[in-house]
Length: 282
Length: 282
Image 1 (cartoon, rainbow over the protein chains, first blue to last red):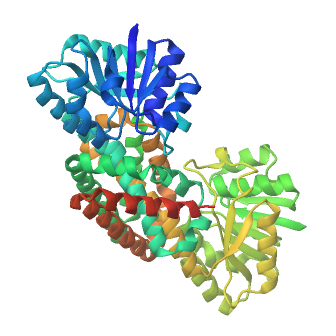
Image 2: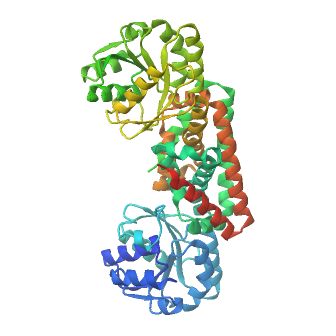
Image 3: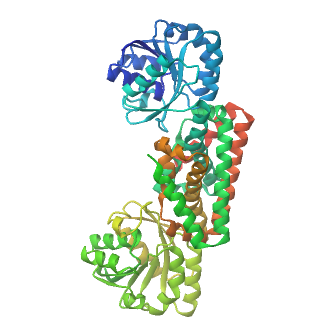
């Protein structure tokens, strides 16, 4: 059992880590670090956390398990401060949606001072954001990708895996760059495309929104995601996102060429082949 | 009350018209025309229709209200035969997802023999297809777009509107070309994009599908749609789809340029502005 779990950032994911850890009895004490005293106070009042602070070093003091749950750019930026303040036997992880930048910075810092850090990315979330929508069951049945490196302390890797499993998640292990390419494809690209779809409809005919059916709503639901969170994800995972966009453009151009060619059976075969790919979804 | 409703094509939409009309008592007799005797027989056995036939002329005989519910290319192709077989006082509509081709062909035929035809497009459906998933409540709360022209008999326009309202739908009127542009934007483009997204992920990393979360599933759900139905929609609405694709490409390129520029606040503003557009969805 964790003696003191410190969570830095108390939005949807950080707040859900607190609520889930509380519900599962995963930690004796839960401390939250954040910028907004009002939000922190709400979490203390509802019992999800025991202590709150806006001071990073104060929050990390005494923690044997740390979850960094700020937006991905903020995590990378705070890592040096975290390294200075964390106890040398603490286990640390984060929940950032892009891993190479964070893991690279952690490796750089660990070369000076070894710490038990393993990157994580819970494939759970919502187009909603903020502590108000945090829930204890967010990770139940979700996949959490962890990204140890060859220099990662195996004990820390095991503790991070057990932590997520304790909150009900399945854990998959990927190398950080592979993680970034995979989530660029299955998460970041679809988000960017959903935003572009909504923008395109606005350009074409603003009145069209009123006629849209369930298909359009579902397809663009993720374009209702938090702009601040996603600005950082797009900026932090630019390279892999660029490769995913290139593959997407090529796929779209081929479909468009198939339509222009007017060969119905060939187009149907192509659509059916892609449709069957989708059956690989878990 | 309709004396004889004849429905040509008994898939998801045609079958749902039959079930809804039966449930609402909208027609005394319901006749189904289709190619597959087994599917037709299933609808007769479960009471959704009274008579079935694979012969178009036989099915149209005696009908005072006709719904053409075949795939959109098939509707355009059968229209001349429908015109020869329908009674001169019958009201006719269709459910095709592209309207200019069908309405244009109907106008051409009506110049020779005036008939009470009005194009319809129920903005309801599913990625599932076939009579087995037809349901009496498919149109409840859905929007049906009707596309009368200046030569449409006003009585026919009124009867078609009342028919859909009787099945629980809201009716919106659009000119056929405007309809095609609007649905290209809010339906055909998102479908094509969803297919391209799935194809792109397959090209990038086939194992990624197993890690995809709810966002990817929702965004690409419509890529599980029927390949035969969608091949025809894409081919019949090529021009408007091309314009929608151009707007989409421009929107995507601007987002990508915003990411490449690395200006976080500007990117966040853009994402937030598009996000707020989506709030116009009904």
